[in-house]
Length: 295
Figure (cartoon, rainbow, N blue to C red):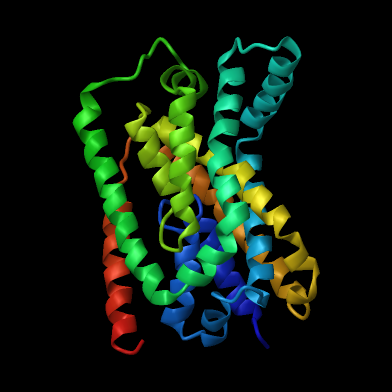
């Protein structure tokens, strides 16, 4: 069997945890099979066509669905705000501003992924490259955490009560574009989408809570769109023989992602990126040594 049910569950859980956590889901889906000796998966990952592509499609859609459901109340308001702003041809409310900021931030990574995702994956979805870039991810998180610590004296305006109001007040179209451009790095295995988005948000004037929430909201349409775009891999020949495993893995990813984002939504109200930075560097260096010495 090219993919067992046990492997599907483990990889689904890994995807669900590491997508919202700033630790690179793609990097872990490359490194964990290498660590566990699942060579059938390791060899399939950098191929332009493989069963693993079909599997990842389902995991991404499941993760995006979990994010959407957790923030469903916010998304309902954002969708209404979008149509309201289009109808009025102007932006009046924080929700109307935020939905357009999300749209702007989605464009760079969306276009780059559409054009270069396969090329980047075939070049960098390899264990050693993923391990090295996971260390780079940790350094990026350290830089963001250090900047946020230095800026800690700049308190948020507590006259604005909601995260949406804080984000809308702090963000501009240019900053949203910069955050969206930073997400392009996440197409490389080892670099975390949520990590680079949060760091970019911190440098754009958001605090931890707001940058985390913006990251999760921004990830939802990008991950879901990527999954839909790759749907032919799932329903085509790449999915033959593993659709049961795909379903089980998707369910595991959905549950893990939902509880991960639930935890992180509270965690970043009072905590920082430093633990994830330390983990990325330590695990990345460990995997570099593990692979270098024949692991």
